[in-house]
Image 1 (tube, rainbow, N blue to C red):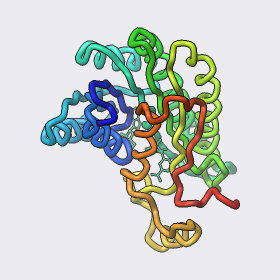
Image 2: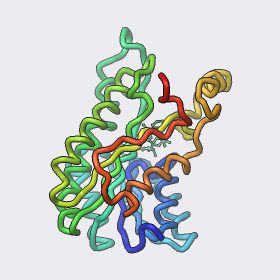
Image 3: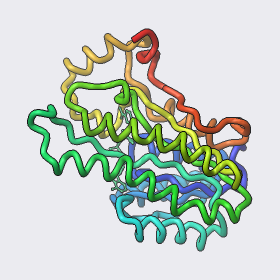
Length: 247
Ligand SMILES: NC(=O)c1ccc[n+]([C@@H]2O[C@H](COP(=O)([O-])OP(=O)(O)OC[C@H]3O[C@@H](n4cnc5c(N)ncnc54)[C@H](O)[C@@H]3O)[C@@H](O)[C@H]2O)c1
C-alpha cells in the first residue's frame, strides 16, 4: 500500500486518465476526492471505488473558478480531515490551425489546462502545509514539443511545466513536492474521436507502436504521489512509448 492513510484530490477524475489515477490510488489505500465538472462521470468513479472497498467522494466544480477550487479543496478536507496529494489532471483540447483559431478556443484551453492547475495548486497550499507537506502532480503532454493544430494546447501544457518548476521552488519549504507527468497518446475520450487511419499513422511514429492505456500513465502519477519520489521535485516525466526520444 503506497498511499496508506493518504488523502488525494484528483481533478478531471470522472473519466480517462483521471479515472485510472483515482482507482489506482484508492487501491493503494488513499481516500479520494473525485473531482470533475461532469457529475455523472464522477459518481460512476466514486461507485467503482466503493465497490472495490475504498473510500471516495465526488467533488463537482469547474477548475477555472477560483472560489470553486477553494470550495472543492475544503470539501475534501472537511470530509477526510486533511489533504496530502493533489493531481491536476483536468484538461481539454480545442484544436485549430492558428490561422483560424478563435480567441474563445485559445482562452478556453489556457483557462482549463493552465489557469485551472494554478488555481488548484494555490487552493491546496494552505491545507497541505497544515498536513506537514504533500505531493502535487501536474499533467502536461507530449504536445509541449509542438503539434500542428494545437497551439493553444501546446502553449497551455508548456505553461504547466514552467508553473511546476517554479512551484517546486516556492513550495519546497512547506515540504510540498511538485512534479509533472507528460503523457503521450493515450486511449481516452480525448483521443476517441481520432479516425482509425489517423490513429494508425500516429502509432506508426511511436517507437512502441501503440497508444498508452490510461493505467500506464497513472503509474507515473503514483510514483510522484508516493514516498518512492521523496527526493524528487520540479521534474517532468514523459510517458510516451519513446516518441519524445530522438526527435
Ligand atoms: N489522452 C491523451 O492522449 C493525452 C495525451 C497527453 C496529455 N493528456 C492530458 O491528460 C489529462 C487527462 O486527459 P484524458 O485523455 O483523460 O481526457 P478526458 O477528456 O478523457 O478526461 C478529462 C476530464 O477532465 C474533465 N474536465 C474538463 N474540463 C474541466 C473543468 N473545467 N473542470 C473540471 N474538470 C474538467 C472532463 O469532464 C473529463 O472527465 C488532460 O490534462 C490531458 O490534456 C492526455
